[in-house]
Image 1 (cartoon, one colour):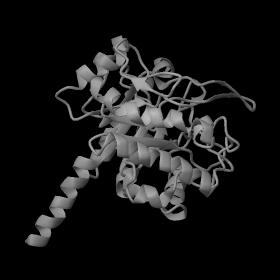
Image 2: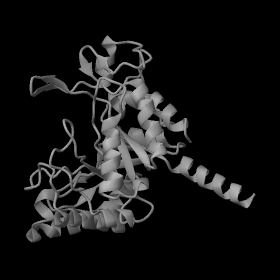
Image 3: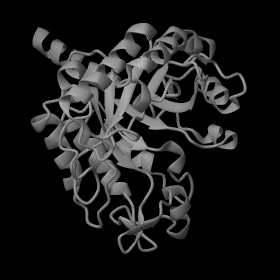
Length: 321
C-alpha cells in the first residue's frame, strides 16, 4: 500500500511539474486570447538595458505589464527575453566583463520591480566563431558559467533558462553535434532548463526528427531530460528552391485551410506541424521523460477555424499524465 502511495505521489509530481514553455511576440489585443491554462511559462518583453550593462524595469513596456496582469491568479510563470550586454562580445573579452558584472548587480531588482519571474536566453552564437552551431566544450562551459552565475544572483525563486540548437538534416545545425551548454552543470541544476529548437516539418505522420532529438539529447549528450523541453514550431518555412521565401505563422496560414484534417501536415502547399503530430509530440515528450515541451510560439498559433494547435499538444500530454 505504501508502495502504491509512493508511486502515485511520483505521478502527481510529474503532472504538476511538466512544463509547456512558449514566447509571446504578439500585441496588446492578443493578450485576452492567451490560454494560460495550457502554458506553464510565457516569455515576453525584456528589461530596459543601458550601455554600461545595467538593466531596469521598463515602465513603458505595456505589453509585458498586460501579460503579467492577465496571468495573476493562474499558475503561469512569466519570464523576460534576455536583454543586456552582448554575450558574444563580453564572455570571451575580459575588458568587457564589467558589463556582465553591472548586469548581475541590477537584474534582480529589475525583475522584482516588474513582477517578472525570470529570464530566458536565446543565444545562438551569432557574432562568435561558433555561429554555425559547432560549439566546443570550453565555449559551452564559459556560457554555462554565465547562466549559473545569473541563477545565483536572481535566486532560486526566479527561473533561468536557455534555448539550444539541435543537430539535424535538413532542419537543424548540420555541424551542431556538440551540446551548447555544459551537460554536467545542467544536470547538476546550476540553472533551470533548456529548450530544444526542434523546428522540424515533414508531410507524413512520422515524428522521426523529434525522435532523433531525443536520441541526441538523452543518449549522445546524456542530458537529464527532466531539464529539457522538446521544441516544435508554430510557424513554417516556405522554400523556393534552396532559398527561404518566407516563414508564415500557422495563424496566418491556417486561414486558407479552415478545420483542417488532423492527419494533414500541409496547407496551401506549405508544410506545418499538424494537429495529430502535435498530439503525438506531446505524448512522446511525456513518455520519454522530457521535463516539458516548447511550442514556438504562442501568438503564431491559430485561435479560429477549429485549427488551434496547442489544444492538440495539450491533449497529447494529458493522454499520458
